[in-house]
Amino acid sequence: MVGKHWSADCPPEGTSLLHIMSGYGLVQPLSVILQKADQLGTDVDCRDANGRTPLSYAAEKGHEGIVRLLFNTGKVHVDMRDKDGRSPLSWTAEKGHEAVVRLLLDTGKVDIDARDKEYGQTPLSWAAEKGRSCINRSTREHLSVP
Image (cartoon, rainbow, N blue to C red; front, side):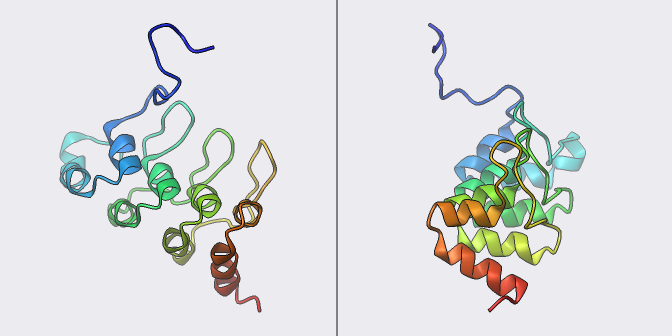
C-alpha cells in the first residue's frame, strides 16, 4: 500500500545525486561532479538501499556516455552486485542495450555466468527471456561461440 505522503516511485534510501544523474543520462553535470570527486570526497561507486551503484542505473537505462564517464574514473567496480545479486551487465542485458553490454564485456572484469539471487538467471538468460537477440549475439561473439 502506498503511503499518504509519498509515491511508490520514490528512489530508494541512500540514492545519491550520482545515482540520479546516471539514471537520467545527465552527462554534463555528472562530468563536472566526477572531475571534482576526489576533492569532494565523493564515492563514485556508492550504493543505495538496494545495493545499486550509479553504474548499475546507467547500464540499465543504456546511457553509454555515462558508463564511459564512470569507467574513466577508474573507481567503479564493473561487476558490483546489488542486494538481489544482479550486476550492471544483468540489468543492461535484460533491457537490450547492446552498446553497454559490449562496453562491460570489453572490460574483461564481468562474470557473464553470474546468477541473480531471486530468479537464478544469468545476464544471457535475462536477455533471452526478453527476446534480446542482439545481446545473445554480442555475448556469443565475446565468447567466440559460433
